[in-house]
Length: 189
Image 1 (tube, rainbow, N blue to C red):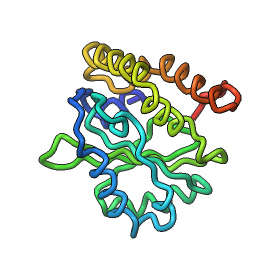
Image 2 (spheres, rainbow, N blue to C red):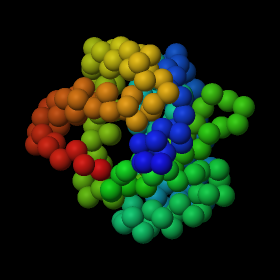
Image 3 (tube, helix red, strand yellow):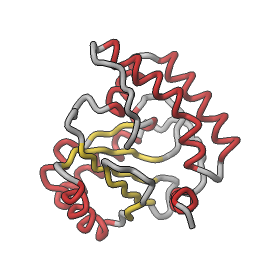
Image 4 (tube, rainbow, N blue to C red):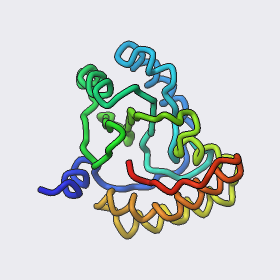
């Protein structure tokens, strides 16, 4: 089975939910719960992605990201995370480790990304989050795109994600240029 098919099966169906004002609280609770397992890494854990944008429809997934010094360190932390319900997923990332936890009996999951990022805290995902919060018109256009892609690729999360790429890259570069940062040209992760 190829990497795309493995990721598709591990990530499940794409469904877009109405905005839920409890999503930030879910993040805060999970961050606190992960503190003993992540140690100081949890201090920099950030909520990003659509559930971090107020009043935006989103997949009911709390995306979280924190910087680590190396992939070896991420792997060490990943061993601790296995006891908390997180499973490592190989989605083809080169500079991060990706873990997923599904909440039993709820339409909610957590995605945890431990990234080697020398440019933290101006990581593209964090810049995008802040840009979408500040620019509701861009956030609404993104929401429309996500609904359309979910209808087309509901059973293929990797294709759904790929379909958002060009929109997100433009938005990230708008945010970067607005902050006086150079445009991102290397999207490899």
